[in-house]
Length: 322
Image 1 (cartoon, rainbow, N blue to C red):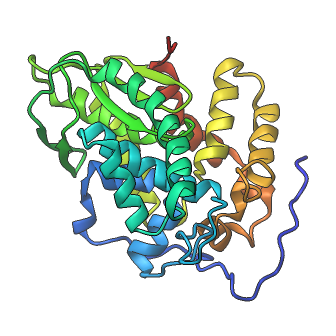
Image 2 (image 1 turned 30 degrees about the vertical axis):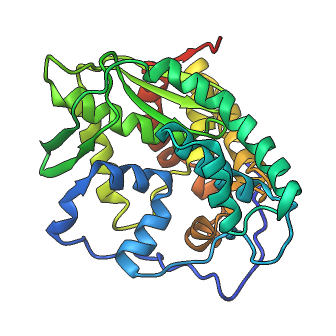
């Protein structure tokens, strides 16, 4: 039997979902591919914000006005991402540096130049890798509008090159990145135009992955849309980090469900970057803190994790960087 996790009883964190919400109106059946990706990146957040209009404060903080240049990981990521975006757009690095200094995110004078140089060097290595994939001809953007099981999925695919679609993020690859790339890959494969490719490349800071052609992409999207609709009524037992760990382990050995749940539970409790377990996410905490972990990590959790992530794992191949 799984051990229960003792959650601090915070009166400000009460579960709203002893009973499910009413079914949403039909407008929710029209959803962009980006919003569908956002839903699966945190279904509880999507439900609470979209249907209840409640926005919780997260642990992410913006860069301080004070002249403190000991950057935390989030601050470093934000600056590096901006440097990378400008670099890939062709802007000279001296202009990028002046923009960052003007925003007050770098020290004045030579110290600021040194800090910028260190950050720019880290982004340059990644930029060089992405150029390996983006050296091909960029195709015209694709506008998709799919009718699937009573839903309308729409959006724009604007990073399609001759051999493949590309999804990029200058950070360590995480389940949320796989979700985003996978949603856009399903959309691309559903487009079904001969002049466009049916592969997607995910390029992250530490590794890259290729997603192969899918012949039943609309069927897979239909399954995800069904989960989306369920998650608009009651919090879906889907947590990207924990669910991915379960699916990844069960994909290696289908008979190891118990040990796979244990690994997922460990991710839920203690392995979520610098912020504690995934259960510390304020939206997951709001929706699930009053529920015993045995009731969270049940058959429903397992089935949803497999439905969402097993196709990702089956069609994913790691690409080795040179």
